[in-house]
Length: 78
Image (cartoon, rainbow, N blue to C red; front, side, top):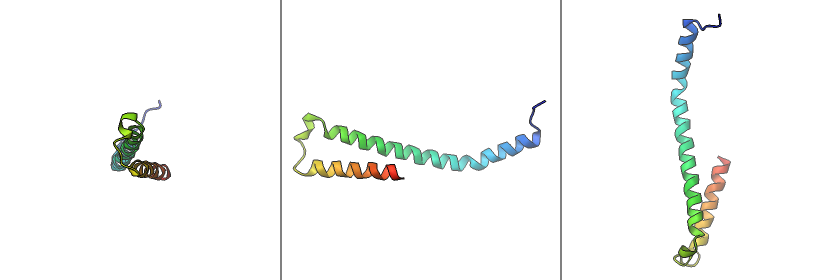
């Protein structure tokens, strides 16, 4: 009839509980990565705003851009 036995259902529930912690850890990691990536893009966009360009001292903007790019490169590799 294509129905699952109680033993199969119990096994599936046990497996789901077993992997729940792993899934939560992975979810947390992915959310953190996405948050950092969004922050980097926000920083990059902020640096390119005309009204803010004059607010940075010489060299600071380049340092920030380099740090943002370094972080994005690291995120791509990990």
